[in-house]
Length: 303
Ligand SMILES: [Zn+2]
Image: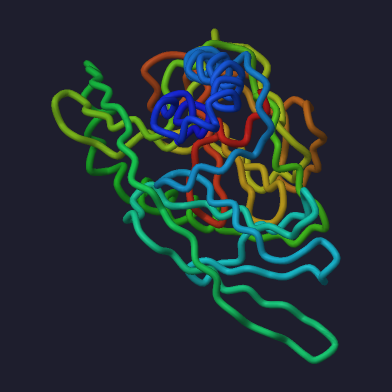
């Protein structure tokens, strides 16, 4: 939860002697709370990124050691996680699976020092969260239930996508604060529980931008293209590896302008938006993965 909002709800419950300070807090916190709520509908508020949101489909930011210590490594569910040096500390950015159960989770921390390799565990807590439900109607039912002859292709592509999104390329520093990959209205948020033609389907694993076909789509941070191909559901798709398990995916492109192995700078064009694959209309579907788990891309957007 947002501490600024909680603080504004607290006055009157604290000792009287602290009243002047509480009032000051409330005066400062209320506009911040309103701005935060407004920011949910309209990205125009100043926020540093990445933001911690230890919920399913969110990010846990776990302090590992002081910045003077040698760089530790951290592992979550057997996979290495992104470790960065920021605010005077080494900290892990842990991607939490959308289907994770709330409760205590463990992180393995490995530090190499003069005395050898030390290993310890640290815990963090996943808080419960309920995402909104979205009902969709699609007239072309082949897009809801794929024809039997497409199943083999879909299965092959799903395995390929798991392999791509679980890669870990060790780089010294990662640009974990992302720029929006396109300019446009957000049409579908991450985590929406979708009901297609009355049937519950997988929750939305990305963030959708409503864009006319042909709108430039750009790299949100430096990275390397690890796949650029036509997928059954995602259509013309590009995967970008930003390093240390931070991977991004762009779907339904009309045109792909990059090739696997190509290095990208932040802001460099990936392609043009479109409606390829199984899309209800032209838009950009953008997914972001951290240690293999799809997370809410908005948590990585500075705004
Ligand atoms: Zn989408």
